[in-house]
Amino acid sequence: MLNQVMLIDEDDVTLMICELRLKKSQFCKNVISFFSANEALTYYKNQILLPKNEQELPELIFLDLNMPEKSGWEFLEEFEQEIMPHIKAPQIAILSSTVDPKDSEKASYNPYITAFINKPLTTESLANFKAEIR
Image 1 (spheres, one colour):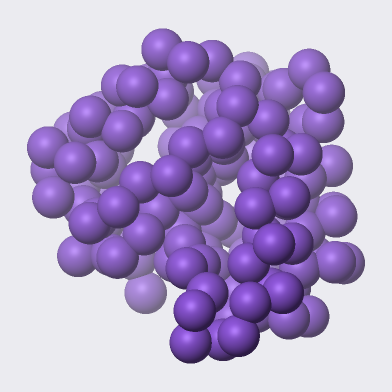
Image 2 (tube, one colour; image 1 turned 120 degrees about the horizontal axis):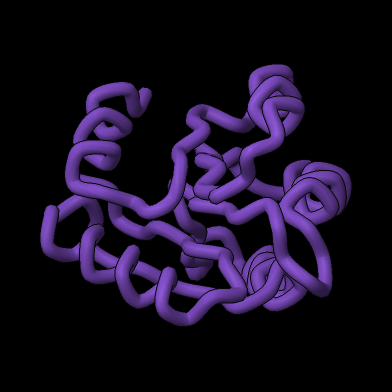
């Protein structure tokens, strides 16, 4: 069981469903959710200012790609440049409704992305992903 998982998605219904699914399946102890990539980046920036023993960093991020303010790809770019040098890399799972095959292909080349899951997050997709977690 993971200690903490982060959800980033602009849709509050999706966040609620994902939170319930993660808790009900006992996938993790804690879930933190953000409606935008910028909110999640701010969270991380604040965490890396804390002493290492006080940081509460997620082991896994479920990331939507299509968000209005900043896309998931833009989040990843900024995250890799500004956050990753200061922390142990979390696993990142794309959780998206995209139908563009280029997104899946692009994700396969990113060393931090461990899964590409189609919305909605289901018990089956979560179980399959859980089996693959390193």
